[in-house]
Amino acid sequence: MNEKEKHELKADFERDGYVFIPGFLKGDTLRELLSNIDRYLETIAPKLPHGSVLYEDINRPETLKQTGKLHRHDKYFERLYYGNRFEKLAEILLGSSLSREADNFQYFNKPPKEGLPTPPHQDGYYFKIKPCEAVTMWLALEEVDEENGCVRYVKGSHQRGMRPHGLSGTLGFSQGITNYGTNEDKANETTFHAQAGDLLIHHAMMIHLAGANTSTTRTRKAIGMIYYSQNAKVDHEAKAVHEAKAVHQLKLGGQS
Ligand SMILES: O=C(O)CCC(=O)C(=O)O
Image (cartoon, rainbow, N blue to C red; front, side):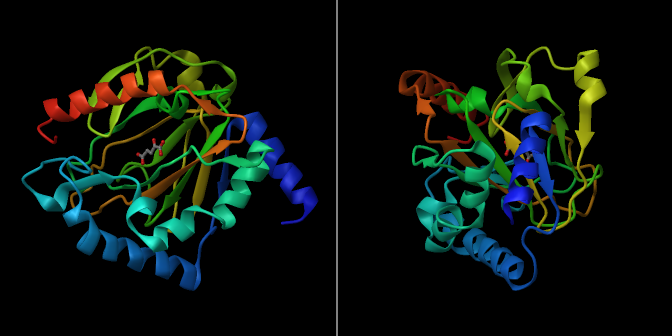
């Protein structure tokens, strides 16, 4: 990417709160990622402690919906998270070098028929960082559209402050915006269809959500990585309170 392209990408990100980069991973690199995801789910995820892997129905492994910190459990994902094209892109968009406090690399699925909607939320509410300078990278691992639950952004919402959040009742996304659905929200909701390897990147203040998977046959697989700017400092006390609430919700869902 030349300097002009970097500048344009950053300007788009600052204006809209997101950028969409179709075909960010392709060919052998994409195939390698997909086969490592399969390997991880088959050989590593089953050995992780109770509560590290979430299911729509804990009694049915095929309903696996989410698992985090892949980079902590496997070298391939550690190399993908750190020191590569994703990090470089985060530096360009944040206009800063990165903090090592950001620590999540997640796998998301919405199993056929049972994959629930992702509640409207702002990632910054979960991160508890000040200033709220961070990005989430969301990469599709297969075709994603309205039927299997594509991501929606509320364009420009990263400039309109943090909205109130409360318990959402959704495992893995414990908090959702309590007053979502204003005329402004609806008018700016933008839907993204994606193919495997397409990358969406959003600012931590961006309001986003995703539909349920209404297909009877298709899954909806993706990965998400977070990066904080060097300036972002974690409020550890607030984070601990937030994590305790998430664990409580896991317990209510019988998954901890
Ligand atoms: O995969 C999804 O449905 C949403 C992911 C998301 O909200 C995130 O990565 O912040």
